[in-house]
Image (cartoon, rainbow, N blue to C red; front, side, top):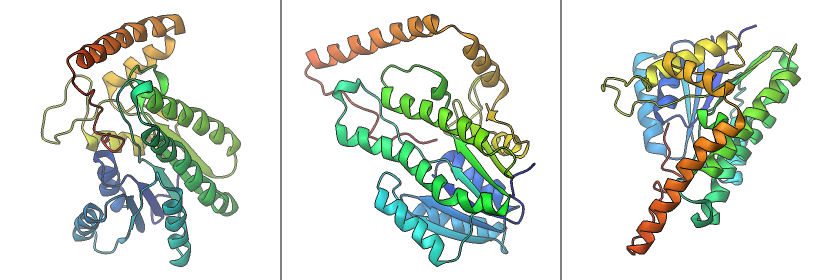
Amino acid sequence: MRPPIDSGTVLITGACSRIGRELARQLARRARTLVLVAHQKEPLEELRDELLASNPTLGVAVEKCDLSHPDEVDALLDSLHRHLIQVDVLVNNAEQGEFGLYEQQRWPHIHQMLRANVSAPMLLTHRLLRRMVERGRGGILNIGSGGGRLYIPGMAVYAGTRHFLEGFTESLRLELVGTGVVVTRVEPGPVAVDAHAPPSWMSISAVRCAREALEGFERASPLVYPGLAYRWMMRLVSLMPRPLMRATGMMAAKKLRQGTALLEERGQRVLLAGGPEALSR
């Protein structure tokens, strides 16, 4: 069973991020229509023009949507309905993250991450999945993070949302056995920021990450770790006993709290990672 990518309609959230762009470029050669979703319109239009220049017969719809706002998600889904766009494959790629001690993070930012990383993919999947099941064909590709397998001091909310995505995707996959709908979760590791920079032993290019994600999706793999070194590391992590994982995390947490206290003593504001929009795949 393969997801209906070829000559199908694929919706990609977070389409202007590094992985999102590469997914769009690789899917543009095969899909009939791409629906590109991001929270800024101009980068979406630039990506659309790039894709059409290389694939003039491709249909491309751009939808500006901040997935952390439920009313904008509803507007996106209503727009698809008005334009008679029937989604064959949903790629939940968008995410938000913030770094810092949990008690020092602002609740509006925390709530925003929960809506973007949990509520939005659930809502999109819920609204689009029923038709896929009725047609007996479809695909859900959830791009998560290795954080879904780890305990990460300083990113408690982000890690929690990635753990949620793991449980949701695995359970949904079991529900959909025999329906013709393929469900795959991808947990990328470090992705090089500069496409021209040589990758480290652990990081890989966004091009490779997108390629391996789609290859695993087409094999109907339940879980994909892009990159050979990272894949083996995550397999070893899965074998680690929880007490050892906690002990490792405890050391990182101690350093984080000590560093935060030192900054406060110097009267410096603890800088978070640029707010919830700073995390870019």
